[in-house]
Amino acid sequence: MQRISPVVLNLIILNVIFYIGIKFLIPYPQWKEYFYLCSPSTGHFHPVQIVTHMFNHADEQHLIFNMMSLYFIGPYVEQILGQQRFLILYFLSGIIAGIAQLLLTTSCGLGASGAVFGVTAAFATMLPNMEMQIMFIPVPIKAKYLAIGLVLLGLYFGISGQQAGIGHFAHVGGAIVGFLCIKYWKLSNLR
Image 1 (cartoon, rainbow, N blue to C red):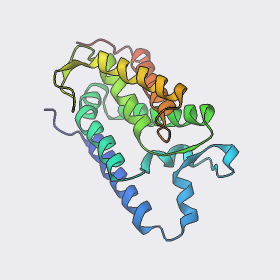
Image 2 (image 1 turned 45 degrees about the vertical axis):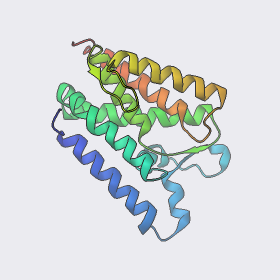
Image 3 (image 1 turned 180 degrees about the vertical axis):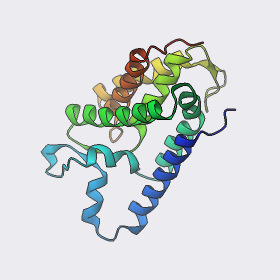
């Protein structure tokens, strides 16, 4: 297993601190809307939400799943890209993911999932044949098949409207950004 890298560790710490702060320490409920990404049609949109939504999570399970994904995949990507490019990838994926969700739905969203999907797609683009053991899947799966499957599921659920309350278009948007960043940096198919 890859050792946790500095940027991934700091992102996990920031996400946990923001989650605890937003959930338990912000005394005024109206301030919490600054940490959700809301469609302008709701009347609750603030430009700062394009970044802040990435540090808010619906519940502990949402936070844990995103941070576990970042913990297991992020260090590989950070090691290959370096700290600066990794941060660019992470934030660009999260921001574009949020914008994709805004353009394609009228709901509010939150979470680091778009950024994590960008990191996952980058991983699969750089190391497409690396086999991964995924929870609930009894056999190893190659990274490229996992990423393609996640994008296809996201598109299906986003278009069909199934699993309401999940930012499927944000997931797809983040994955596309991750893929495009690696192609732009000419780092695809390293193994």
